[in-house]
Amino acid sequence: MLKKVAMVVLLVMTSTGLSMAGGTVGKDYGKKPWVVNIEDLTVKNENFRTTKWTGRNLQMTVMSVKPGGEIGLEKHDGGDQFIRVEKGNARVVMGASKGKMTFDKTISNDWAIFIPAGFWHNIINEGDKPLKVYVIYAPPEHPAGTMHKTFEESEAAHGH
Image 1: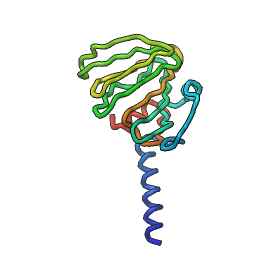
Image 2 (image 1 turned 90 degrees about the horizontal axis):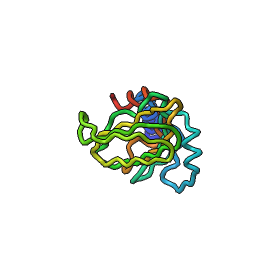
Image 3 (image 1 turned 180 degrees about the horizontal axis):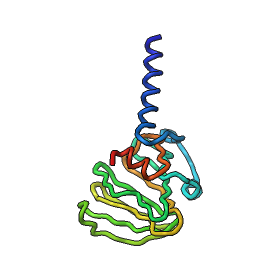
């Protein structure tokens, strides 16, 4: 009985912790085979970030960035990242240091962005409609099922 109570308390604390961190948990199809129309999934997503598949070695999220919004300046030291623009117009900036973005390119539908581990980067929506992208992290970056409705929720969850 004590073990069951402890498990329930642990489960409640875990889900409360995710809520307190600014994110909610959605359906994550990871750890099992999954086939999806990624363009349809990406374009229909209304959340800033929705984690849809989390495996041992990689993760896929879909994102919707408001006009004038951005993904946010960040770097991932432990892994590479791939971003594909399904719909919208964006500016991509990258650099080896936070204060020196040596890469700057304007892109739109169907462009892919490859971000090496350790590079600072940001994707800015320069269009007048939401920017729709999907992101592949290797290794996973977010807890399985992470969902942030807004940029502000995402920033709060990452302690920015």
